[in-house]
Length: 298
Image (cartoon, rainbow, N blue to C red):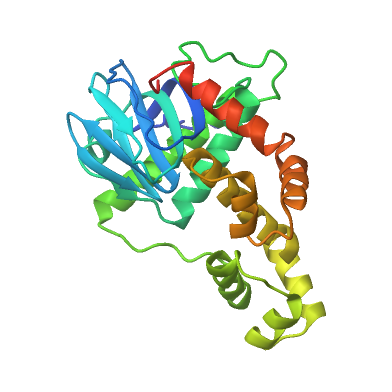
């Protein structure tokens, strides 16, 4: 037997996430304003819906939906919401050894479909790593779960590194094209239609006529592609919009129910409670009390 001597190669590490501070998903209310803050780690800010105002040493301006910025360590920064806006915002604080992240501190970058999926997967894994709540400002010590699943810490590290590496590759290649998802074109069109018209009265029959299909085929392909029935999908859009309107203030629950096409306030409250595990009034109270508890993101 010959003892072969293989020459093992070491990995070159271009971007290493060493530590993580927090992973938040905020549902901000209108007119909310954070206190100017600085800290010794990077902070990723991504707008999931709506828009938010950013004031920082490297960039001051508006961050729109699907846009992201990464504040550099030690950079003074703050966020604010307009009177007519209640955005959903992801904030992740992390320490990273990479000299290229400055690319994303001076102007917003639009995340393509692949980057959005990676970020969503990272946030999901962070829920396995950290204990709730995930939406309380100025939480300086976000606690880890004691009995977290195998490899959880490492998965968060890997996912964040993968997200940042692909982001840098896209930025350096100058490729601004959004990657097309491998989805059914008809289902994609139907989703776009539902997103634009979910407040209106909709029916499966009408959708079949509009998109030239039948009920069985439409229902099967939609559920297979999206993971929800059409009714579930529309209801989820309505609840997301209801939460935004509640955070904006200025409308009663009855007015919100009517605007979103619910047959009654009772049905709206029942569906909201079923989906969110709390009533609209409790949701409003919880959001305001959490944000009032601290006036700055990490």
